[in-house]
Amino acid sequence: MEGNIENSWVEKIRNGDEQAFETLFRTYYKSLCTYAFHFLANRKEAEETSQEVFVKIWEKRETLQITVSVKNYLFRSVRNHCLNQIQHRKVKDKYIHSVREHSKQNQNLSDFLLEPWLAEEIEKAIHAMPEKRKEIFRLSREKGLTYKKIAEKLHLSIKTVETQMGLALKDLREKLKEYIR
Image (tube, rainbow, N blue to C red; front, side, top):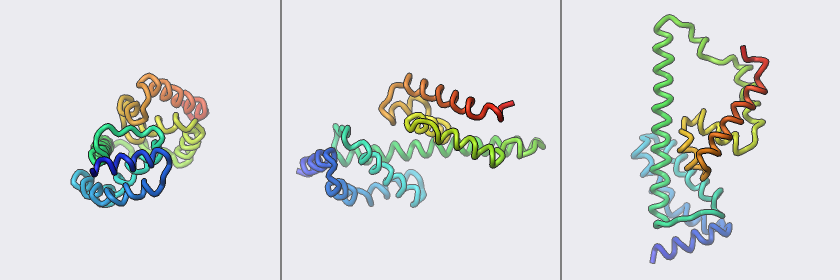
């Protein structure tokens, strides 16, 4: 019985029914936050993760395909999102460790930091990219996702991700050529 009700919610959500979406959200949000907290050990991150899963559902509602129970789909989505965040934390921690090691070797920390004006120019160049290219670039460079993970997340081929990343880097080189030595 529960599965039939949930399947009708999904069908209504696919058709843009905000009330069905809100019902789904209210039904599972708290338990998804609790589940995410077990992975992330951070209440705010757990809440943000759960919210992001619902945002993605709404954004992709027209093409939403749930082949398992809605509950399983939501919990699996939160789990995968948490695992991606944990992986991203590891990448950040590794980078921080690397910077600290280099600074211990009497290197100037300013070698690793961008001048604020250059960071602003880079951000402007990224912002000027087409939306999908910008999203792919940010997932790769800021979130640390592999091309394969990006392709899965955005439902694209790996080749498309590779091509878009190549174009993103070309855009950056072109827009920042006066700063490249």
